[in-house]
Image (cartoon, rainbow, N blue to C red; front, side, top):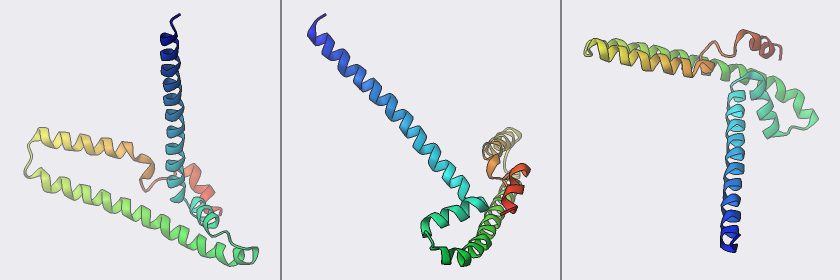
Amino acid sequence: MNSKIKYSLIIISTLIIGMVIGFLIGGRITSTRVENMRNYYTNQGFNREFMRIIEPTPGQRDVIIPILRKHAVLNRELMINFHEGQKEHYIDLINDLKKHLDKDQINRLNHVLERRKNKFHNTTPDYPRKDRRRRQTDE
């Protein structure tokens, strides 16, 4: 085999291997970040994240844990209220637009909003689901 072809194959295979490794690492980093963000909105995740940031001494832990639990509940309620408010906003939006749209436009709007609702079902006020809710309240 010609040496130019060998070197070209080595370079191309190195690039392909590097792209595959980069793709896998990038996907893992992204999924980790998304999971950390999701955990922040649970009581346990909120507490764990702030304990990791603060790194309290054993004496501080006794004082800090009740404060974090209180604010974790407030954080969760804030998120639920946000989603309820957003849902009300979309209902108002649809009601205001219906007066000016034809049937086909209304159907497209409803379809997009339904897809959005299904896409983000894990962030609705019912999240976390009933099986996870028990673990959060036990903290």
